Length: 425
Image (cartoon, rainbow, N blue to C red; front, side, top):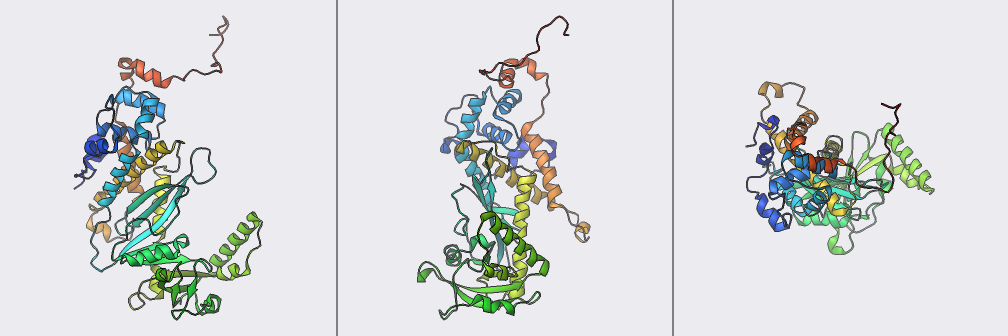
């Protein structure tokens, strides 16, 4: 049972939201996050320091001043830097423990949806991708079940994250790879993955050539069609049996996709393949679910639920601002990102607790509670609890450490000062 008194803004309430079996001191010592206990001698203080630097949006110098005023310790900005650089492995353990309790609800009907996707994070002054967050999301529980941080070389794949019997993994076209799909079937799970007309190699079940463009006209707006196919892998053992679902798009969506293709080809200076313009009229889905239980219309409806993970990423970026990475050092950047994920998972736990107290008469109305508004209120409560309450009168007692963090370091360029003239007041 989560503590409902969080809006009071107490740090102890934040700690009570963590898994009860998680020993912060033991895991911090094991991961080497508390090798030197000078100033920051407790794991809870180190966690608070990481959350202050990360989700609270403080710089290293501001975190140093805040730590002094809050009584955590007399730390310079360099000391804060070294502490956080050494804590990324430990923060990853906390994320893993929070995820282990997420999405553990039973599913009596035999299947559970898992939405799989990734989002890109750019570092300061970067014009491309520096980090990727790979995620799996449970739309029924409204929470992440898997989170993994990699650098730009970490590709999107269904081989990441757990795959349990009864799971239905729903992913976009970037995950249409025979290796990942084969792994899903090996673990007893199923998949619904969007694909492109040349994303995978398709064959009939009797190993004859599959003519995709001859099959496309059979589909209509409200009547998708399905064909049994064999997805060719790198070897015969990695071939994946599946169904190809073809659904014709509305004219507006077709024209929008064709404009995107022409614009992309124009930017790259390449010639657009005419087959791409034909395939733009259709949505292609691959699934391992049996046709006896899930017809073509059901597969198309299930795939549309994939948008829920996009909304989850939007909450990460618009509410928690995980896309505003200020750190260039890889270890510090990981700590910064992991602290945001810890806060996001705490919000999910508190949100689940709040939604369990919705009045029964409210559930019968057409208007449902807004997950966005609930998360925003819980975010404000958690940030207040992390930062605590202190007034400026404390600066007098700790003036030395506070002003050391507030003052600029020595520079070669002289600081501009107002000239001392008699005529100037």
